Length: 227
Image (cartoon, rainbow, N blue to C red; front, top):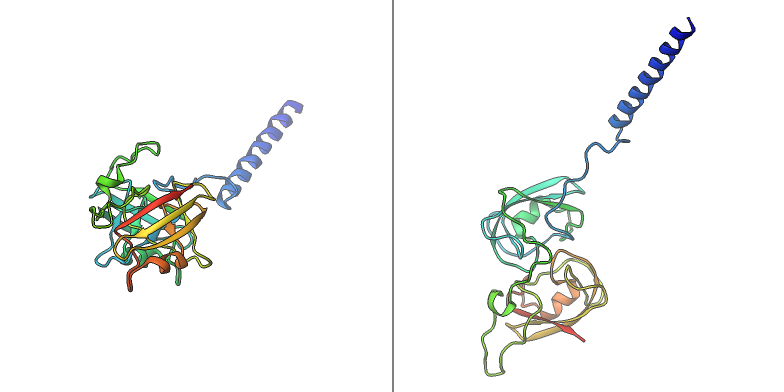
């Protein structure tokens, strides 16, 4: 009888433990669905480009299909990379409208997934030569050639307020950068205040200092590190 009781008690304890695990998992106590790995780090922002939902990228080649999810509202957009930019993924207006929260021009909590198997270049890969790859790079003029830029692609901005500043996925906090719009020769000096998914992502005040009227993107630019 004593042996039988021990077996009954052991079976009862095992059943209770199994039930507790099942309940805990159902209530979210157990980590059964880890967050998906994102192909990009930092915030996702957008350009003022029109057209159907699309994106540009400094990491994925033209034709790459990406799924971008805003983790704060679980809204998703699927886009095709149509050209280069200074960001891991830079959405156009239509794509951002599909995932943004009202009044926000940046998606801080996000997941970017590659849908068609394109290879993601390693983070430590040698970056392309800005002088040969930056879209719209200025040719030497009367005032001499444009200085070598430490970033490639177009520059855009977040809706962050405050004095002129920037975030970056390439330069550490505290780095001082000079950003020049080659179309109007306007320049702004900014300090990197945090991380983002772009080589340089200006805040609203910094963009206002160099933008052309009605444009939310600076395609022809140079970014210099100030020592």
